[in-house]
Length: 606
Image (tube, one colour):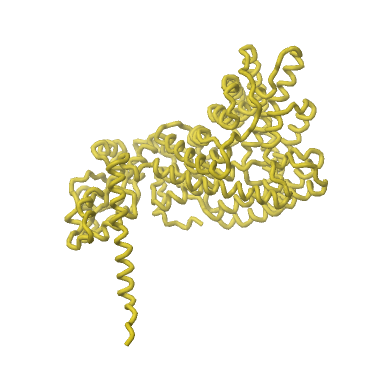
């Protein structure tokens, strides 16, 4: 007689037992790390920011590798498109036109999932931290096609969007509250920008200075953490050299510092003109009232027609910027290239193509700086005027004038070129251009995305209560839960305390991770231990009507990251959990949409 196979219930019990046995080593590792590492490390926002940086780096590397591959497929050329050797005129015309038509077709699919805000700036400043996955990916695919086919737009916009999407996905999976979820989106965007330019500090400052409008430590520290992790990971695949290679030049003489400041004044005056031209291009295409496919196709056709005369207008402008930093291209050539590049950027961005104008702005600044050095050399023919220093300073000051972010502009130019000699003139020029541009026009290149946040009336902090920030339905166990269930819940989550309730959902106490340590040395899980045996009933609590000030007072007496929130002191029904980080972020950056619950984290997200 052959031995019969085990029954299905027996097999399932064996499988569950194997899974549960894994909880013990996981919990031992957590206890070991908690005892020897930073307090509350797994609940720390820095740990979350590091993971977001890792995920953002993966998306950035995938996008950049795909861009290189698609560009090679179209043109059989691996270098920057604007430095592409001469190709037939019909290829110059057809590539961006067909690319625009295909990219527009992809954008049509985005309309199916456009119910939520898609731009990470709007999500951080106005939204609840939720970014739709399918819509964001499709927009990135559209951007990929536009850039690879020669559209005059940068990759940094899509990298920031993909990083922000990674942050949103992670935060929702971890069931973060609205404040921390928006911070994860911001960390992802900072990581994406850092990967675009190998500039971790600049990625963090970009989001802090432009999007959040604050360099508060509660948010700036995680932004830096995420950007550094993302840069370290991405450079393993893409290299760590400076984005813009240029020959070193000597320290700028003191007598030339005023000339660089004057360059900042000139750039500050030209920046509003540049922004006006971009908005004119957008109004022109809106006035045509064409569908997205034809709009992007027409934009690509215009770029193609311009490229017949000057193929240097293709792409983001990165390659031509590097040429300007390394070679003397001549005043007439530079001026014509600058004008045609602005027209190509107007056509690409105005048609609705997805991408960023950060890199095209850097090109315009480099060209303006190089033209300015030509003028200085004509006035002072016997002086030694390093054209490279004026070009690199022009990149920074024109960027500062268009973004209204002088600190970010100084840092990003330094990180992208790693030129120590340019620091002092760069600082002077960026501040000068920022002051001049602000006097001429209040708007920046990102005003459209941030306009809603500027007009959003903030709820006074004294009107906010714990219920406005708490996360509803926190993880908990019943008072009769066995040790295996308790161990499984603590092993699969990062928090340090597990709440215990009765059958009426009344809060009874909390089980700390350390309370399980004596039982983890045993070979078999204890079968007679239940939640009531492990919990402590002295954990401080909050009520939904408590003020934020009261919550901070309670947190000061508790070493944990979260506190349980009850309906009232009498019934003691568990409503939610409040994270200390959410309170600090709200106080640091204002409230905006603090009361908008991000949901349970199980939303559609596709």
